[in-house]
Image 1 (cartoon, rainbow, N blue to C red):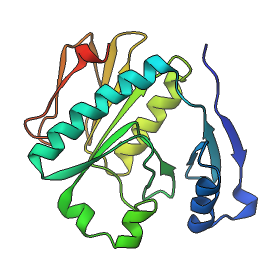
Image 2: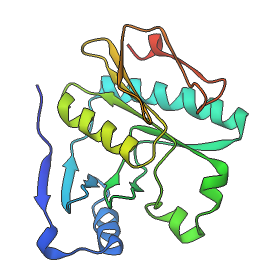
Image 3: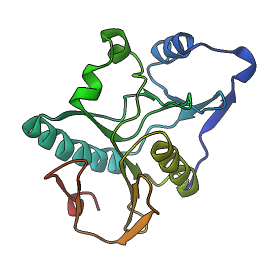
Image 4: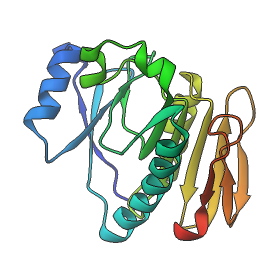
Length: 192
């Protein structure tokens, strides 16, 4: 059953980035995102099955990133302030180390004002596919070089790349990190 997340229109309150950060900290049991037009989205927690599959996605990327050491991986609790002003939390993300190191320690500690080089989203049973597709396009428009939208319900993966049309794969067993996540291959069979 697809449930639409709760959306609060905060445009008239003019919350600063710091105030939005403090709202998130004060409500740790909730997962917030903010759209570029100032709306706060309260996301529901995932179910056990999706949580387990998301862990397998994060685990594979984190293990590779630890060995590769050219960047760092992030889990679904990490929020990033995109150039368009939105604060988004992909299910998994990766950022080149030299870009991460250009941020101040304060920027790294809060919602880093940077768009990840790679993002991955795993569609849960309650997620709206059009909303996730819009989110993936937003990442690419703001600087993401490679993105994967894994749609377990239809056993499809949508691949988003900078300056290229979306590619759809049916039931792939693996996904290549291409020239963004060099020498990384995701075992999608563990995710299905």
